[in-house]
Length: 223
Image (cartoon, rainbow, N blue to C red; front, side, top):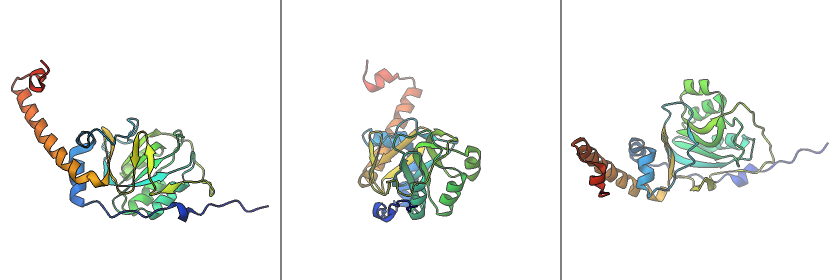
């Protein structure tokens, strides 16, 4: 019997990037996904179905894009082997959403390596155990259906991927919270954080005027 064909994964695992500055990550967490999306010019929003699988889960880190074949999680295991502290695996599963690509075992491995979270355009499972572990995950939902591990199936780590209308590159800023997930291009992080701060100050002034009795129609000039 012929030996099963194997793909050489090394050819499809690309180098990562330097970590995003800790101060930038802290600021991004404080602003949240919706503010950063607006501050970036309304770009970078991942599909609204991708949400924290446990209330209170929040993510901020640098993207490690992962292209996974459908119904197979071997490339997620490969990504775990090369990702490190502060990384967020951002995974596309080629439209095969109804499988549980991630669970307790992989969360344990991710925590041991210091990863900052998982964002997956698909489902995960073991939610009670995931909540107990506390490793933050944003996903489309929960699914008990298992996945395979095809040694010949193509995929990639740290190569650009698309999720919805957002293209994600290694090292991009990923922020996920109860509102959703946003991806900010790395080259724009400083600019977007400055704009987010400006927006926050502006909105605080709007709130003050509303509380003083002005109408939103008057404040925004829509009368």
